[in-house]
Image 1 (cartoon, one colour):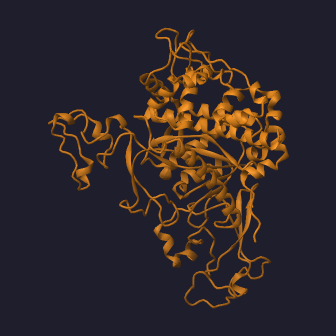
Image 2 (spheres, helix red, strand yellow):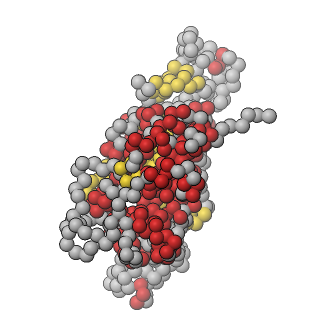
Image 3 (cartoon, one colour):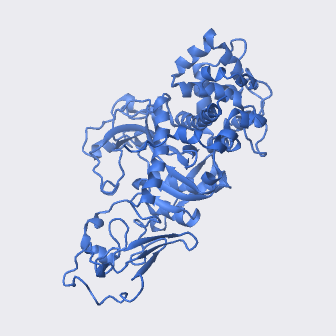
Length: 559
């Protein structure tokens, strides 16, 4: 009977460094963990609030019986002093002066929304629980006093302001094919995510190896909009005013569908079949696969599950020693947006958000296998490309493999049709070395039969070399200059599969958390509120990881 593999929890429990550093006893001298804020964050311009968060201490955690009744959210309220977050949130909310209405303490609202997120509640359910006397202790911990609580409208306004002020003046320039350049706005809400990551580092939950030889991966997730789909062809023109002199175009009719005549008063400002409350939501058919043979170039747009809404693109770091992951940053867009450009922009922002991070491997599925991404990974991050292969119709013509010099998996092929063997990636010289190993002389069959060639050719000029022909592949193949199938680890090799599996586990874990929190269909309308909610959920996902690992380390001490 095969030996059972240890679970992630069991592996961490056997890690003496993890138990000693990350348990309550190991963290005692650092508690509370103060929310990290850079020196350049200005103080909040507001001088008074309708609530006021004050850290209440962690001493009740000394009682071992308390751990059984406390949730991970309860642990966070004790382990972390969220007070410094007040100035950060004030800046992100766009507050510039002390005048105007007296707001609630932004930390109080942050904690309240975190309570909603981790419990998967709707907004009305959240406020009902906040008003209930049995949750008076939570209200006090959040900083609410005298039964003065925010309203539904107040929470909507808070989320909208947070999302609207996320995009700053900075832009990230991404190079595309054909010498084209596009711009992606810098998402300042990523600062909150980066600060949550710093908390995990401060607690010793991310190992030095996981940070200095980092494996990072993106994972797109479709979020259904709160609005219901009325037309699958809706686009930005559907929200433009229409007149008799300048009629609004109908993208549905252009595709031969029913569409809308937009000849009623309801269509004057926007098409009645559009969704004005989710004007940035778009339709997509999601198949859940980006493997070779299903690339965007070849896909049948009639296949897949119909989805209407938004997409998040988190960038994850997977720590192999702690067998956990953290979210480094995120990007929110319409569901049909091309995500490889956003991913390239995220990679270009990594050094600004995490100057000490050293990336070794970048893993992703075939949807990210474009030059814009592959070039940044290779030339900017100096990392290995483990992006899944993006298929192209030319790969099916095997007779072209010897002419172009590689097969449909990026493995070099000699002019006589024999495959090369990988000899690993030279990190210093930034090249993948391949050799033929005299395959034609060792009884191996060619992968491509060349008409008229002998079974054991003797005209090859590399027969006398010790290892036969040697090829070094750097950024692209020398023959045609293509990088689409160039990878720095041999595709489908044991190393490739191990790293790819590790990255996929991290992605599935984040998706599972969002589904558990009922964020597959969004409970808010409009891109600003959608963006704010998803970014906050990313922050709380990282914080939940912190609480869970501290709980495991403390339990492993036996106290």
